[in-house]
Image (cartoon, rainbow, N blue to C red):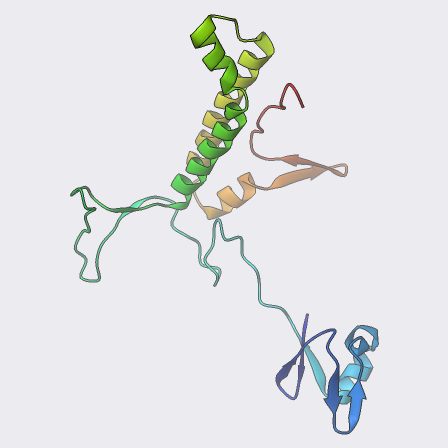
Length: 180
């Protein structure tokens, strides 16, 4: 909640003056609605905050799918190598983030794979199982993203569901680290 005094913003936890009276920094927090009103202080709702993964700052949904980049005249734009320039949609950005997440989860145990290649020493079963589960979860999450028909579906996918006070993520989760 924001406050206005004579139409001008009034910061919380900052002292202010009305006429000849000086008010302490905590006055807005401690005063009643009537006391504020009597001074001419009004409350206004804060601007809504939108999840920047899915929406622009004004609340407009970002494009879900990739589009060919065009100039102001509608001409297709090319990269330096001559290929078509593409503006990534939300789905592509989220799927790329999933790949980064999976890669970081796998990287911790890459040394087992390198050791196996160099010395033929076996990778522990728990590590192989974990690495397979990470790749499977990543692929499943990418499919879940692709299956979203609109922004609302993506927002729901990245949310959670509450039942009996327990919140469960709507999206497939990555496996627990076997050594955590």
